[in-house]
Length: 350
Image 1 (cartoon, rainbow, N blue to C red):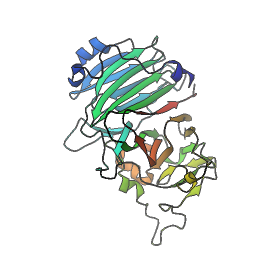
Image 2 (tube, one colour):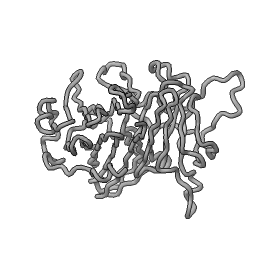
Image 3 (tube, rainbow, N blue to C red):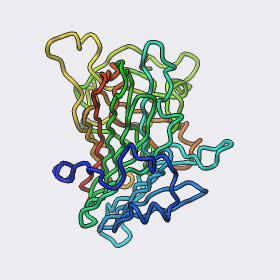
């Protein structure tokens, strides 16, 4: 965490957010000329601009610019020369638009107002590069920005030798409160279904809950909530929506299908003092002997899902979806105020 705090969010001095240049889609060559740094390279694939960050030890990520989608993260996890592993599960979206992808790491901001559509606030927004910065190629950062109605949104993606950080800042420039649900959801791949686990949530309350709807989702909310067939009469242990349970084991094996939110139950939140989910937890890939630590900042909840046998629809690798979220109690941003949230994925596999 020290590295994240010491390498703070950049103060843009190249293009201001209100500049007309931010509304123009620049070519990769123009982006490279304006924002390129050592370790930061702008390119294009299928007419979609993206940026690749690569730090000194070879760890890298790829960020699609128009939809702010992190489609690849390859950290160095073994000491051998080619000791890099792709840990994100990203697949083509399919359908008419062949340029889109699903999975990866995606920012979710959904309308939660009483009269709102309940859909994504970002569906009609186009992200542009606002700034980029580096620190001796051991810390690299790209900041994207977009507007959604009265909201100014900044999304900062940072890469370090042993971690990746994604942070969002939302400012309300309107005259009314804005209510939204939010999450930064990561789809991680694993070598073996039976060797997929999570650690660090013992003692937390959870209940069965759908994920927030997202353009990057692999399983829709209804698919995530649908139980796998277990015979004529189902299972007595099947989780039911709205029924809260306390996690009673340190390590949870994620080979079966589930969709959960770890959070303080609504009834508990009425108390003066109540337990909240931890700020960090770990994913465990026993097949590759790798672990990754998730750290949440500014979010109240933790979302976690595993696809069970449905993973076969999306390739040979198993995957889970997890990340910090504010789902049960929406975020309210008053006029002129800002809200911040962030996720860090770090490891000590070396």
